[in-house]
Image 1 (tube, rainbow, N blue to C red):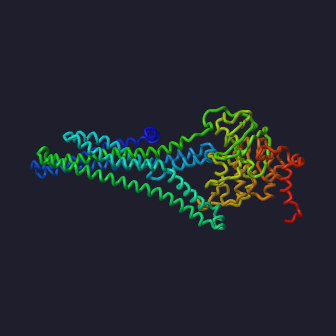
Image 2 (cartoon, rainbow, N blue to C red; image 1 turned 180 degrees about the vertical axis):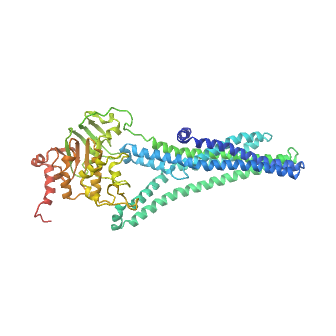
Image 3 (cartoon, rainbow, N blue to C red; image 1 turned 90 degrees about the vertical axis):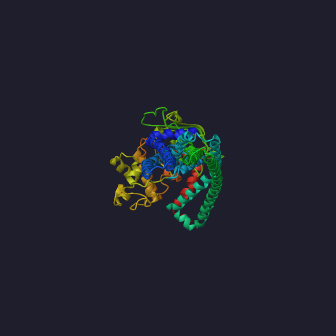
Amino acid sequence: MRQNISYFVRDSWQKGKSVILVVLAQIFLSVALAIVGIFLPATVVQQITFGAEVQVLITTIAGFTAVTIILQTINRYLDSSSSGRRERLLLLALCDATEKTLRTDFANLESQSFTDAQEKAVGRASGGNSSHMTIWECFKNLGAGILGFFVYIAVLSVVHPWVFLLAASTCVIGVVARHRVNVWRHKNDDLQAIPGKRIRNINHMSERAGLAKDLRLFAMTRWIKDLFTANMDMLYSFRKKGEIRNALAGVADALAIFVREGITYIYLIGLVLAGEISPDTFVLLFAAVAGFSGWISDILREWVELSRHSMNIGRMREFLEYPDKFKRTGGVEIPKTAAYSLELKNVSYKYQGADDFAVKNISLHIKPSEKLAVVGLNGAGKTTLVKLLCGLYDPTEGEVLLNGIDIREFNREEYYALFTAVFQEFNILPASIADNIVQDTMRDDRRVENAVELAGIQNKLSSLPNGLESLLIKEVHLDGEELSGGETQRMMLARALYKNAPILILDEPTAALDPIAESELYNRYDELSKDRTSVYISHRLASTRFCDRIILIDSKGIAESGTHEELVAKGGKYAELFEIQSKYYRAGVVF
């Protein structure tokens, strides 16, 4: 807890120290208000006992009331002014979590342990009732409790020590019960986090326009509803158990208060009857004992709350400090050259939790400016191979080399800058077409126009009222445009061309195009990939004929290598696959 709270306070001081200063001021205000509250009735009783005039009484009450109003006004102002600052700190914490997600190793995004850590961290931080918002009240109450504790000890110096022990012991009972509830919640966190993550995924899935057809045609509505309900029941069951434990802790706390105040009341009445204290002292001491017990309860209760907040902040720390293997600072300088070669040396890769390797013992050298095609059956590891070349994965075994240097020696962000790509799976941003292509605050209009023309999306843009400035995604923008799959893929190609990096990766770049459009695009690839090291993945073998070399991979590694003509002449697996594909395009074939 010490480490988590120290981390949180240091981080908050760096991001907005005014929140901490406000909390310190409120601690002193809270104790001052409590002192005024116990001395007012005692002072009034004392003045009545000694026969003070009505005017004196009114003046005394007015003075105490004025002080109380002033202190409360300042306190409320501080509460109001600090809420926005607290919310800002919360948003900055969520921003840190977002940056972690954006910058973490790509392989982490496919790891269940990472996504679980993300769910627990963001789930605890989101919302106005999150620890990042409410911990400040805990700091304030705990600080006021500690300061008030010592102030009240001075006031209660005439009371027998066993009263202090009674107050402390009865306060501990309820606090221990609540602490056990918090420990139970923390130990059983997955009972809430896992169904919560599933519910959000189900909601996201049901909202996706791309799944709307499947949901209707395959009558999946009932199945999704049942799945949602089942996870809601799991979440409700966990929370119900927590509420029952909270209620039992509340009963224990209430019984302890009843015993404490009953015994204290009887004890002080006995002192009055014995003539050991005056009535005004009785009023003062009874209020002080109640206040003293309140301070002890606050200290213990807020300490338990601080423990709960520490657990939640610890979740955020665990996520933000989730280990990354890639170098983000330092590293060997990327070679400054016009051409880059890539090499795989005995590379194998196994996904987390998988029994078998996705790619096994592959050795491959891609020469500078070479155009290489990678083909093979589904599941052979083509996309995995490309992600290894891009540095999105580090090999489980072997090395990936750039100009003879292991890429693990480079700053990974600088290494990424060498690549431009169109992947098989792509997503568009709810922004303009130009922003989707450029994805930077600086924009070169001439480069944008050139990339659009080379990608073959110019005709579509000319048909739109706002051209490049047309917004995408109707769910976000009322006037948003919708692009077809082929048009979106061309836009992604324009984005890859705009970046103009020395290494070009195209993973099924024409999967959403018809054969004629695909043929037109491939006929221009010589121009698109001029002077670049280029790697293409395609399931249509005829489209790779322009490449300098083609490799066919299977579960055992690289099965065949050569030009299109060489592989067809060889009569191996490539020739067999090409024959199967090509027969469907021949005239006269009856299906």
